[in-house]
Image (cartoon, rainbow, N blue to C red; front, side, top):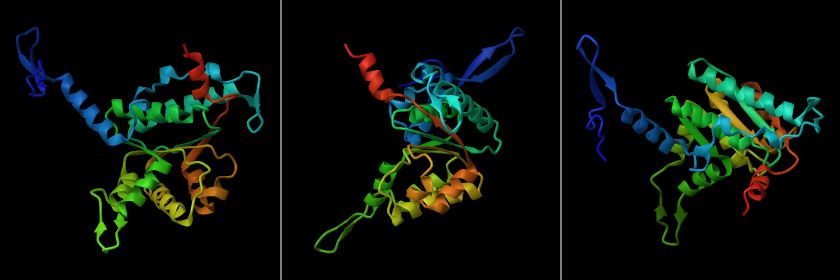
Amino acid sequence: MRCKQCNDKGLIIKYNDKKNIYAVPCDCIRKKRDLSLYEKSGLSPLLREATFDKFDFSYYSTQKIDEVKGLSYAETARITFKAAKKFVERFLKGRYTRGLLFTGSVGSGKTFLAACIANSVIKQGGEVLFIVVPDWLDQIRFTYGIKHANNFQYSHETTEMQLMEKAKNVQLLILDDLGAHNYTEWTKNKLYSVINYRLNYKLATVVTTNLMEDIAEHLGERTASRLYQMCDLYRLLVDTDIRYANKLKYRI
């Protein structure tokens, strides 16, 4: 649909108090930019709604204590939330910033907070790739095609190299659900390749995982070591799965 303000020219002509003519960018330029960034980001429609002002601290207990930090669940959540907002500020200033590694049980708000980061960056014109790790690994497998009895190989438009290169070089990579899956040597090597590259080239990375102290056991020592080197570790702890609690809260 043609923009009614600028007639798709991208600029709006205005006059100042001295009747001098000047041009300003039309809002449609920003909207088109945001749409393009979202289409490339991998964020689902639901996660595109995640914003920092929607983060609900009421799910985090003020009574229960994180035994590792010695702080209440609520205090830990506030520290993690503050770190996420600070990360966005540093990233948007164009400075190299250490990544974030969010740990916690399923439904503790890790993915939501990572999506808050992604949306904040995109709205300021930053490039983000949000990868759900198990789905991304399946995509890579799918590029290998299906070999039929007649020996024809059916390839796909997206190649393994394209998926890997995009993950390696995007401005901000978010690896969601790097969890306790059945990681084979093949999957460990794919993840190591991306994480090691981003560490060496100082590219910002945010990771969410339901693994706690046993990351090396599932991902291998090489990958775990690099994650700890490139990311600051934060925890989100809850009494119950926030997704389930939300379902009960809004059930009619």
